[in-house]
Amino acid sequence: MNIDIDRIKKIRNIAPEVTIVAATKTVEPDTIRGLVDLGITDIGENRTTELQRKKAKLKDLDIDWHFLGSLQSNKVKSIINEIDWLHSLDRESLAKEIQNYRLGKLKCFVEVHISPEPSKAGLSVEMVVDFCKNMVKYDKIVIVGLMGMAPLTKDQDRIKYSFQKLYDLRTQIRNLQLPHAPCEFLSMGMTNDYEIAIALGATHLRLGRILFRNEE
Ligand SMILES: *Cc1c(COP(=O)(O)O)cnc(C)c1O
Image (cartoon, rainbow, N blue to C red; front, top):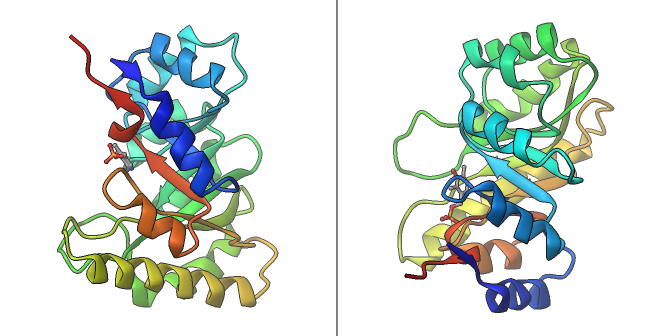
């Protein structure tokens, strides 16, 4: 697997302010090393054991580690002090586990279910504001933003509608000016829909496939 430098340049040109979080589940540590050489130092994994394994091989690098996938409560203890950012805070029971095991504050995105497709991932839109307010109980948790995934569709309007919803929710929460929930960031946009996400105000793109090309 090789890094597609031209595509990375293209994304940086259209969105110089946006943080690229590389979703590296399909690549090995040597490829992550190549990304860091290109200045991509935000690295995201969605399995706890994989994050630990890869991080152990890259200890000499200055990487911000992001956890992207759904996090089971029984895995919190093993991973929560290994990461800098969590993109998938989606329930109070998870917040409790984080509060128990994390040493110091953790930057969390609240994951919101913005797609009309049924899925277990993410809080429903109606619950997000109250959830964020309620997080004041857990002083380890800082809500830095919202994360969402658009539906898998070619219908651009449906994707826009989902991202717009996340954007509006972010504004709503930010306007509450809660010290524990500055909520300045929007983690949205993947390989298939990152251009729409940029247009609708993404601050963090979670990119996997588009960064890499298969070479025989
Ligand atoms: C793999 C993954 C991505 C990146 O997906 P691509 O479509 O390959 O860009 C983004 N977010 C999460 C949670 C992922 O697991």
